Amino acid sequence: MNPARSVNDIAVLVDTLVRSSRDQKRTLGDLLDILERESEALKHGRAELIPEILGELQEGSSRAMRCEAERDSSARKLAEVLGCSPTAGEICSRLDPSLCGELKEASRGLVYAVSSLNDINRLISRQADEQGRLAELVIENLRSMAPPTGTSGGLDTTA
Image (cartoon, rainbow, N blue to C red; front, top):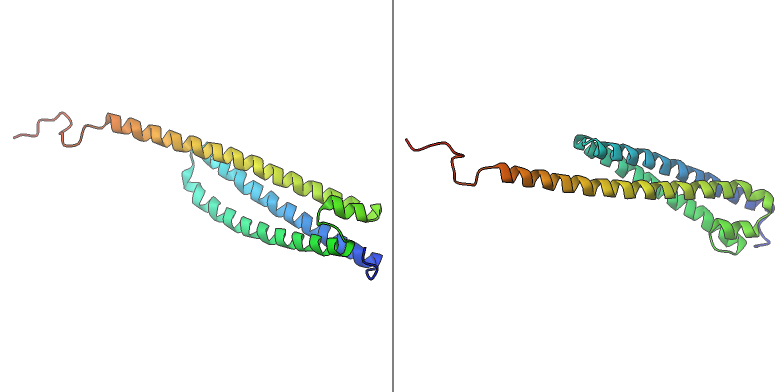
């Protein structure tokens, strides 16, 4: 640990990291809500909702990227002071246990949020694949029901 830094300075850095981790978890939670709406829209064949949802998803993704950059910067600053890698486990191994409780809790919440996003992304991917296959089947059935090109569909058009 850098002896030039006081315990109070380190506590401020830990607090900043905890806050940025919680902000990122909230932002990822917002993304999860948007993705759940997308999943519901796909599930119920509400394609008209998808463009608006994708716009919200793009905005939410931008916010999430900013939060990740802030959290990463906070973790790197603290890790530099402590002389370790910027992971919660490494950071906590160098801190007084009294400073680690909130950091570990925020880290667990963030890991859970990322895991939830991965789960919903897999579900949406499967749903989109199913929707694509369904659309192909519908098109194939429509083509098989349509009269061949160049015919009159069974009507005598010679007059």
